[in-house]
Length: 302
Image (tube, rainbow, N blue to C red; front, side):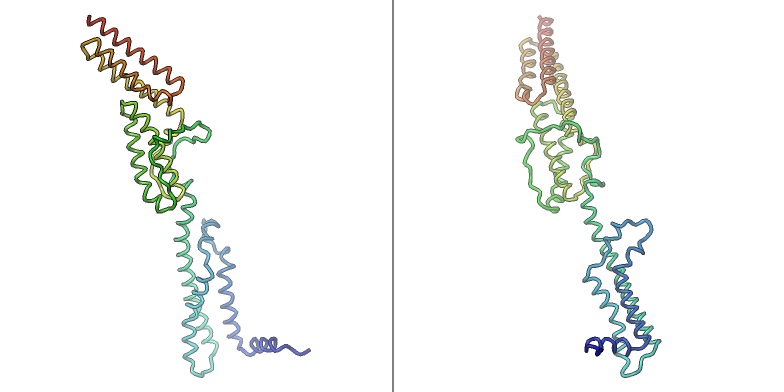
């Protein structure tokens, strides 16, 4: 049976070359294939499959490595000038190809690992050191829903660059709000600033979705908790009452004392709808105590 022109040409290519040339061709083919198929078998100890996969070469990088490896052997072939190559020549050509080739592969792998590790870090930001909160898990705990009008402007965050630019500002505002909430004796400041603080924390959570690290502490988690918010409201009720009681006791006239007791009630009245039933009951009791204090001091002064 006659061989086709293509089959005859292929047979001549395989049998017309020397043993050394065939060994060189097979060696180069094995090296190139090994970059793609042999990577699993040469993983570094302790490395995970995910870490190793980040070093995989793209087709363009593999082609570039082959071209780099072929430069020196081509110069060697060009320098033959009609001379018959021997086994030593092919061995030298093989080494001149392999060394630059594997060096280029190593450089590309290191480059891929360093650049792709950043992308992997972003995808893990929700569970890594970029966590906004390290405190209690609020998944099964009732969370406080702030009033939108008091949350401040909710800035749209549409990219990593937006998140990176805005996160420090949101964090600073949240920290300042937390300090104010711990010391203020003005009900208006407390209720509105509390919701503003929660709004800043929600904005920081949006920044986290883009992998931007936010260096906050576990203390911020509590502001999202409904039970903590209830406790904070109870605290502001008594903190303001302490301030007013000192003022009442310092006044001389019964009328002035009574006016200050009434001021306490009026300061909280706009925010009664944002208290729980238990908090409103507690507020009424404290308000009555201040009124009794004003009347008692008034009677004693008479």
